[in-house]
Length: 45
Image (tube, rainbow, N blue to C red):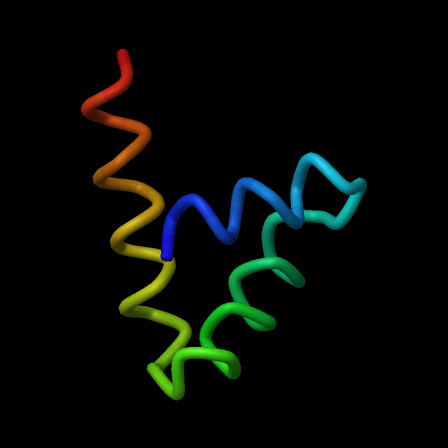
């Protein structure tokens, strides 16, 4: 899921739109996708 957000960002989409698109793809609330992205970014640093 996080990788999918990153794919959209790499293609030039802003993070908010990428999260919204991925949430729709996975049929999840946007806040769940956002939380996963934030957690993944914390682990990277």
